[in-house]
Amino acid sequence: MNATKTGLLAGLLLGTAAAAGGFVGFLIALVLGAAGLVIGRVLDGDMEFSDLLGRGRDR
Image (cartoon, rainbow, N blue to C red):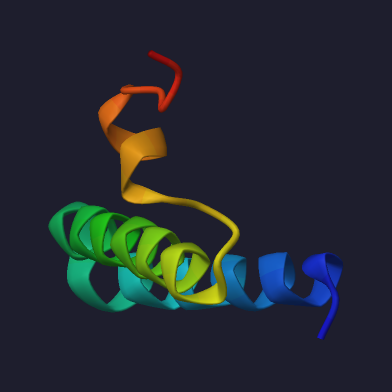
């Protein structure tokens, strides 16, 4: 699945959460989606925890 299809799916899921749960449901879905994205990128090796903390390996 390419980035366009993934973005479309994420938008549809967030829209469904907003319609079903109101604004609070939308915010919860948005936060959980962002957390899932970060965890997925770390597991794929595209991102490291040091990137999130802002600490470089250069010393």
